[in-house]
Image 1 (cartoon, rainbow, N blue to C red):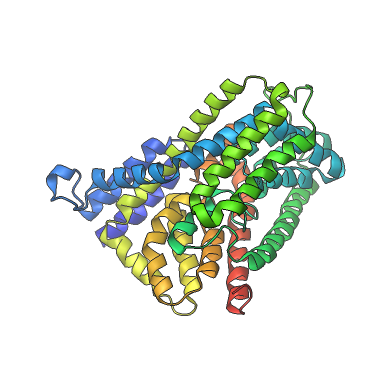
Image 2: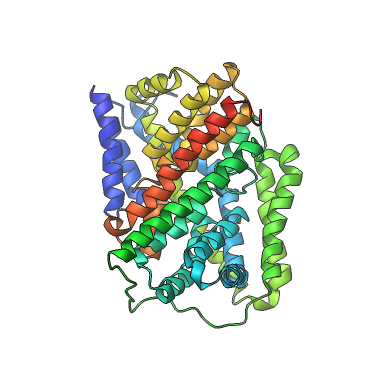
Length: 439
């Protein structure tokens, strides 16, 4: 009982502290300490035998293990995003999409710009930073309440693109190592689910904005609002080609290199961006440096919650919870979805939730005869649902650091399109796989 109290209390504390703005690198180990103390887990390796569970050993094992597995992907992804940003290629693509769709479709233009860049392999955080200035400009001209900007950015970035078949984002690649699948696993179902999430989520987002406008909400300018610099941008085609290169290379090499294909693909994207847009760079080496720092922050935040999960999974309450989840009656896909969703919610990270859950559930479900491609797609989509609870690193960064909003004002819409919509997508995916589609 105490162990379960500690596990639930540690998670609740993690959510509260991050909502209050505490750094995840501090909140993660602090909340892990709460879990360990309530479960009677020894604090230091010196107090236990070799290989036995303890707070410091388990936390750092989870932290360092995630960094070792994913650092190069995070690094190259962040660098690719920064060189796309510094060269103006990302702005060029975003501006082209916005101009094509027009002012009357301001919200759709923002969502589409984020979706296009995300599916092309640009880091989620870089996409938000890149599109935000245009989002402010569009919302101002359309006189829409700015508290919905975080929802528009998040919806286009972390829902129907992040976890879809073929996406270069790591949330689609982590299952490959455990299930021996490809990034295109279950693509037929993935396509249907992505279209559903895109259409339904956009309708819901527009409905929330229209209701707010009907109640009299308008755009309120701020002194520190970003100003779009009127500088010469590269041709949108030279911004689209690097995105295409990332997708093509990942497709060609995913069979032979598995996860490492993403390293080659992102490197190819960086080289292509440099070759095509060299004359447009403001400071290439500074962009490389900023990308590296961004990668360290992003992987550090994710690893911090993976470390928390490393401690959580060592306590008796976690094992009890996993056993209950993996023995849910009915379709094993339901059990897999619930397990990954819950753990992603506990850790506040889709990638962190997968990294913790898959080693535990993949062997169980594969032995039970579950189709690996179906499990891959369900796990990927489900990881992108409860991960977007208020303590998620991307949510905190987008709502507070980028958009300057509060959780109280902005999170309702963010939660609707990044938690509820993906949950409905998971249900649809399980139903379609259960009918035999894509298997």
